[in-house]
Image 1 (tube, rainbow, N blue to C red):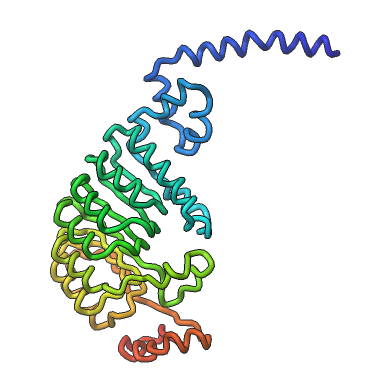
Image 2 (cartoon, rainbow, N blue to C red):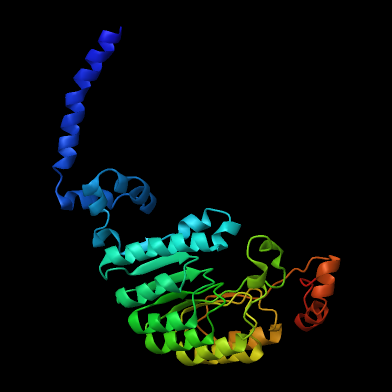
Length: 315
């Protein structure tokens, strides 16, 4: 019995050797074509570990023009470990590797939890960048975003949601140096009911929610008048800021003001009348739970209930 198994194994050896020789004889172009059909995860966790030739092929600039981790973050529940420095270093390392391998060809970056370290390298080596999405990056600052504005003037889409070290200064300099920008996402965490973030996002970061909504709105209206898509969920802008945006950004087709507690139905109506091209308008619409905690913290919503003249706002 054992002899038969040995014979089978010996017979299979030439076949495996022949198959290995066929893969080894693939030209670099053919190998790149094959690897391009794999997902990012399959290349990083599988193909790169096969052999030296495959490892080098995975570093080809053709395979590193896009770094999109957003689908992975969306498919995984937010975890506390995402907010620690160790995880941030891993994201930085990955981003820095792709930047280096891209040889200037990187056009899209969609990551989370990166820092100034990797974004500074992006600013230096990615002149063709069109999309930059760095949601939930607490250690990306205005200073590094100023470098992005100078080094990546072709940016068209920018997502700096939940980045609380970034202020209206970044909006101003990006708008002035990136004239093709048409999409801006500047969403904040739900500060009306932060319970969904408690235990995951550090408390000190939750408490650092930007307060200067009107300053950001002023920067958007002055330096990004050609926007088509704007998201400001849970922004603290008031009627003043909304008016500035609606008068300056006349080409807006998509506007999301979900959770913007400091604007009223009258403010919304005025903005709508100015934005003739608007196709999608997500308006503030809250349901405040009837708990003692929320009644004490958000009792002012009794006033908003009257101002909006709607039965949606319940305390």
